[in-house]
Image 1 (cartoon, rainbow, N blue to C red):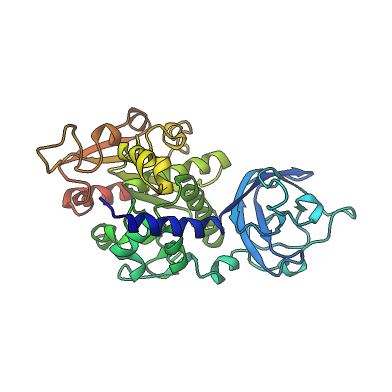
Image 2: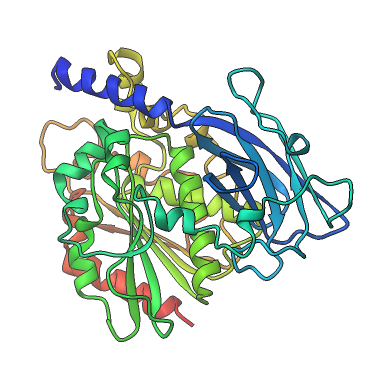
Amino acid sequence: MFGGCVFSTLEEDLEKLDKIAHLFAGTVSAEGTEANAVVVLALHDRQGNSVAKLHIMSGPGQFEIRSDPTPMFFFAFEDLNKDLKYQVDEPYGWAADGRALDASKEDTDNIKITISLATPEQPAIPEQRVDVRVESYMDNNQRFNVGTISSLDNSWFSAEQGTKGLWEPYGFIEDGGTGVHFLQPYDPGKIPVLFVPGIDDTPRRFAAIIERLDQSKYQAWVFSYPSGLRLTWLANGMYQFFEMLHRRYRFDELHVVAHSMGGLVSRGGLNLCVQHGSCKYLRSYTTLSTPWNGVASAQSGVKWAPTVVPVWRDLDPDSQYVTTLFDTPLPNGLPHNLLFGFRQNSIFGSESSDGVIKLTSQLRPAAQEQAQMIRGYDEDHVSILSSETVINKVHAILAESSQ
């Protein structure tokens, strides 16, 4: 289906990605404080002049940061007032007593940081991070967006860019469209609805649904991401955006609408919400045509393709991501509305599907068991997003689930 040049380009792209995606992982614990809100910073220098990456947590626990494998300092603090700034009266801690961790010389997958009230024995704080918003790193880093105001007509959301996200995920990141975009300036009087597209796709696919939103009540947010990356990375990224946006805007409600693989990405993000005891502002979760049981062709791709697209490993029906996806229940009270299509558009298919995703995957028993509503439509994988009946149902779900 694809020529050798595609896989050659993919291989070059993944080599670039490896250079900025070394895994730094560890655990944050707390002594003498509850640490209900934690921020972990990976710093290029001891004073905090340069932030490499950050990780936001709702409390002590495990963290993962992917960054370039250069010597890195790890600083964590309890964000007492949840303003995403470090103040000198907030409990803090360093990994390795404040020395740099060198990925080329030591293991960096078991980093330990203990947060406590300041004591004379603790290494000094990073002076350049005091009273500075940590998400300013995101604002100043053109690779990521946290509430950037964009139009669906933006080239970031073109079909060509969606394909690039699958086959050149590093190139997609470099182009600067990754993150959560607002289609209008943030309005605290309107309820946000986050739209999550699927593989090889962009938020523009939701145009028909977004155009019909009640603009007096709702504001549309869209998640743009390189769909070729591992689902574990993408789910963690979504959870981080949830945390960062909520600490910045303090909204009381958020609805999530996801299509195709976007359902797998968002469900992974919701699982992290449960595991961290956060995201209590979620009001509804609606998925359309999601392959809950993975995609069999991904398994073949992993086995036979000359270069493997990372996401194929997680889309494999036997992958850990797919097989454990429903081990974590949804947040208490969050209704999952499972919408699926069954128009096959082919007389040659041996199994019922929507032309792309098999019904056995869309209707995985574990997904049905945790769903509040299940509705099927005579639509194919793409037309389900422009169906008048489906659009009306999505809008009815939002209205019924809002406070």
